[in-house]
Image (cartoon, rainbow, N blue to C red; front, side, top):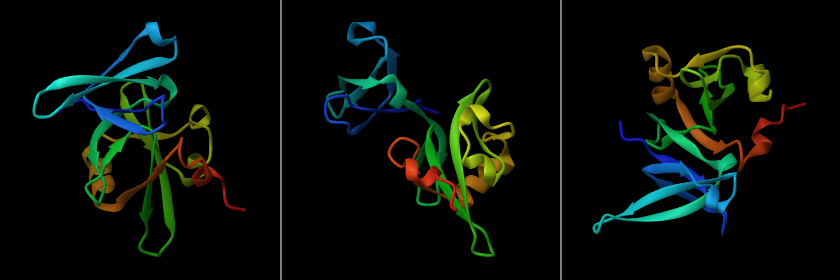
Length: 147
């Protein structure tokens, strides 16, 4: 799998996608550089991004063939019509998602039960049932528990 990253470009707050990511303290302690290779010349362009908004591709795609990155919010619709939401983050050992719906609305630090997304059953569930509907930075309203 090719490692791919995305980050929010500091100058205009748009998302950039590239195949390299590294910290460069010349731009400040909280800055990452996303390196994008331009085709066909294969010259690289570097974008300074805030570390808080830098994430890696999980290697998975949703039902619409969209790449799923750390920080993405996924929606699955159950057979009874109820929507279930999941967020993707990293912890030691790899990428994980919340197991329980109530955990979706908690801060990541407060979630006690998560499921690794690399096992075949979870991977199959995500790729066959889930759609990326946003991310934790651009769509915080999705993480507000309905009243």
